[in-house]
Amino acid sequence: MGAANSSSTILRLSRVFDAPIERVFEAWTSPAELMAWFGPEGCVVDSVEADLRVGGCYSIDMTVPGGEKVHHFGVYLEVDPPERLVFTWVLSDQPCKGGRGQDADTTVFLDLSAIGSKTELTLVHERLPGAEVVEAHRVGWSGSLSCLDSHISAS
Image (cartoon, rainbow, N blue to C red):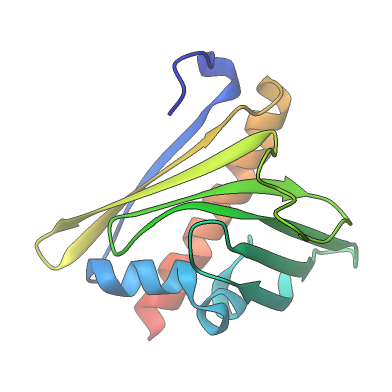
């Protein structure tokens, strides 16, 4: 994580899931799993593509409450199962082609640690453009982690 970032442009969240580390990592990397839980409450994932390798693109299309379509995409920068996943994060209507997203403005770091049969996940989203955007992403990521928790508990 970059030292040049100020704390006002970094979002840091942590949560413990009652599931093995491999299960939590799979939930973040399997398109079928992401379809089942990604996004805050009320969001519907319409499609997911994931080329899970360094330099591979991912794409998540979703419909948010109110009907707006949202397209998230980026490039995997680190893939180290089941402990670490790092990817760029772009919110746009532009597809990920030819590595677009590699130089995105923001980066998400997921670090997973086994705690017995449970998993601690730490999410760090860096280089957000300001406190207002950090707070909006805090709401979105917190909601997503709650949906992930419900999904894992139900399966």
